[in-house]
Length: 167
Image (cartoon, rainbow, N blue to C red; front, side, top):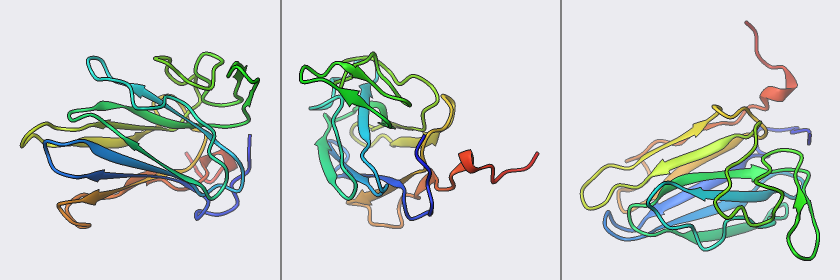
């Protein structure tokens, strides 16, 4: 598993709410010093994002546009190797041994960004979850029509694999 040396080396998932009834844009930025392979999984009854898995080199960012009312999960896979047809495996967050997750969720341990985007005047719900374990620090920064202060950032920016906790 990759070693995180600074809280600045985190994966940012930035989502922008254009309006309550339109699509949202997720900007996924890799601030780790190594390549990651984000995976996405749409919730029941919502369409998949334009890609369900891809390579994201250190320092790169990718924007994905969702349908209105989208719900699902986004996570980062690490230590992946894929052949020319997209078949392979990842050390963490693997989704069925494929580059494109295509409806497969992440194998634990994996840090997850989960979101349900409300339609019309309904609220949006989002979190960073460790329910499937932890593999990387993650921070979510909402931006959009309601301004920076309308929604709070959430995440786990400490590398808890380094033993920075006590019981």
